[in-house]
Image 1 (spheres, rainbow, N blue to C red):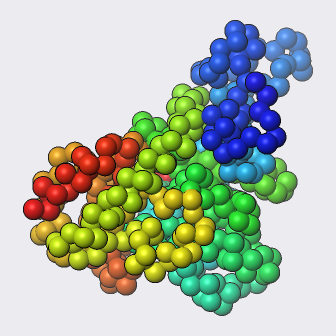
Image 2 (image 1 turned 90 degrees about the vertical axis):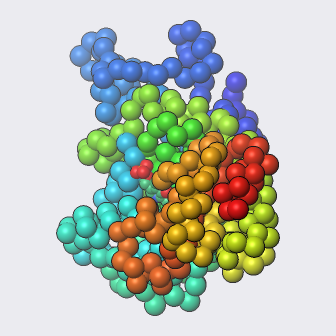
Length: 383
Ligand SMILES: *Cc1c(COP(=O)(O)O)cnc(C)c1O
């Protein structure tokens, strides 16, 4: 079962990083739930010494996602935030990072409330406007940190063009690819230097694990990430590694269904008289639709829409039956949330308004249910 070099995306998702278990032939990589490994003699071991440093289940997942993203090596962490924080440890005091504004709230909090204390500086710009990137770069800038599409405005950044601008200034590009998933876009192939995920979302896909992963392609990044994953130790455990590895096998079919379902919902919402605004990169009315059509394969599973006021949003949330009111995204079940009072509650009201996060805005993470049932649910909730 050697994966041929010509293997295509869906095949890579199912097979990469996994060989039948050498002792039993088990087709599925076992959960190596162990903290240590018995050595044959002093200094004689099978390459495994301690569970923080090495775990075969984690290694299989890391190789799998590295292949899926088209990178050279992967490093799995206890959460998406642990993955992002680890990427920041490449920098040192005095360094500067340019970040997509409207970045994930937890990322903003980590940058502003934790890492700023250690001498890092961050500037937030609308990276969907390529002209805004170069003026924000300084001699001390080390990373351009991109998110595309963003949450919940689904703003799209041209990753290839932004990478070119950054590279011209000697700046490396990090992409948080959680919202798109590698099925929809693969940033390393577009020129990015590091890509990361909250595996909690589409990669695991079943709302039953929290984790993160970084995929790198430069030797110096790989060497550091391997060192600090062990040195700081925020590793993904064997059970969670196994769950995510199970999730990536079905990534392609889940995303194809998710993309199709979300497009169906977008068309329904656009035509609904009580919806004042529908935001989805797959709609021709989206300001970045042309770019999204070139850069993304399918437009992803997130959609936002405005019902006009907080009262109406509250009414819809109280009436949905199938859609669950919850934060998070990327699972097989559809979730609905209210960004202004949930994920973006810590963002000051004036900044929320500037970003377009109104009180009537709802965001749906579309699952893989029958789309007719999702439309029925919203029909009765909006009535
Ligand atoms: C959820 C999320 C994170 C954080 O991941 P956790 O696994 O919750 O720590 C980071 N970035 C994006 C875009 C996310 O959606």
